[in-house]
Length: 406
Image (cartoon, rainbow, N blue to C red; front, side, top):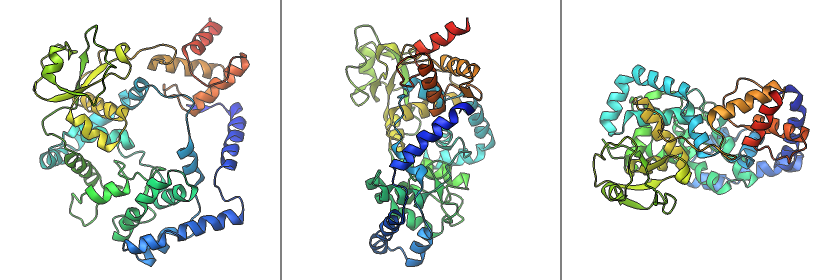
């Protein structure tokens, strides 16, 4: 949702303060410093086999990208609970579109699954999570983003490690400089490979001489399957199971890294939520219960850890696995995510947004995604009511809004 027009001056002032504190070249001295930093990449690039022509083409007329710094430094006041993250990623709209892609691309997915042994639902789920099936691949020039990060000192070690790989991609001609776009951190294309991962694992699936993950869906999906295969994906196995944990067993006592066989978990009373047996009792799994006894619990297997190679966040791996299951026709989690002061359910978040919109503090259709606009609207409401101003969209705020409307 969008922040209401009346709030935009406040947001613009806040944004100006952020930019003023960043590394933007407010003077010729700062601009010279950025130029010098960029030229400092040359010795390493030259040693890596980058030609001067490629280097100059990549950095010609370059200025730092302030939005990259803002994104890298952004620390949200509201830490999104995992249940909210899953709700946002595994939305009805994404499930519907993903199922359409499974039908539309069946011959391609048959072939990719046959070649790499990776479940098509997982490949399509990653595509959906990473770029909403190619509709949101990122519009930042990768070289510029990496240069901005290095020269600002923000995530510089990571960005520097990616720079030469990015330049080699450009030099090989897999993509033009103008189309080599991605996220603020340099993740690229339909399935968001960082340059080093691209260099190691991307494939030219259609044999046209280019590994084009930006405009070529077969190359992008096959590259994802290729990467999962070398990340120890086991064909024919799932990522995990939703389970029921018996009373007396603290699901937070261990972690998803504490592995036992499914048979051992069964003997401890950890059973599948649907009552069905585990297909392979000898598979090793860890117990993952992000909200303890209050929320859903899962036994996560080897393939969950393979997904983590793609993105190290447990919330990401769980969302990919769950979206894949929904695309395959399975239902939502049985155990609901907890709702309390720190965990508003999806419908509660939508209601909060709707009530803020009714008061003229927020614009757009309620979607349940707690972004900067919703946070700012909550702050304005808190100020109006003389409450502590933290922007946290709590159950208390929702109940106050309900009371006012009654």
